[in-house]
Image 1: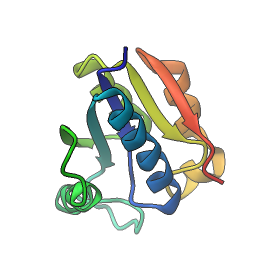
Image 2 (image 1 turned 30 degrees about the vertical axis):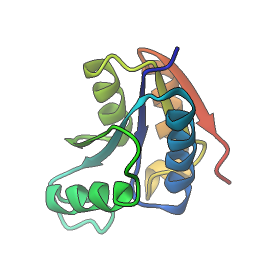
Image 3 (image 1 turned 60 degrees about the vertical axis):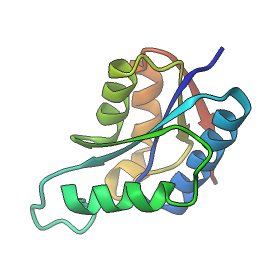
Image 4 (image 1 turned 60 degrees about the horizontal axis):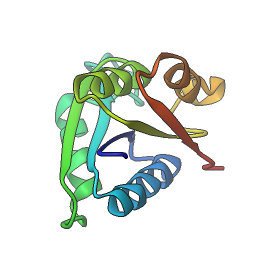
Length: 130
């Protein structure tokens, strides 16, 4: 039984597809949804989110959802590490991640889903997002 689902977002269209899949699964299983966004302190790079921008992104991502228990997590660090960290902390049953996602170099390398699949403390569902 799935009672805790973790999904990451960076606000991109592909991340929104993974979030939509996680919401659908949470509805079907009555699971708590943990939504994660990673941030790094600004250092001049456009793709880096600040803590405030990350918090705003998370609030916007769940604003339309009222019938699920949702917890948001703005976590400093890389996207993959942030998602795995939250999954460990909440004892997640499932991590949902898009097949493509995140921005910049990480998107080109496809490293986020790969790292999560190798480091996850639970099952991982990789949603086809391209």
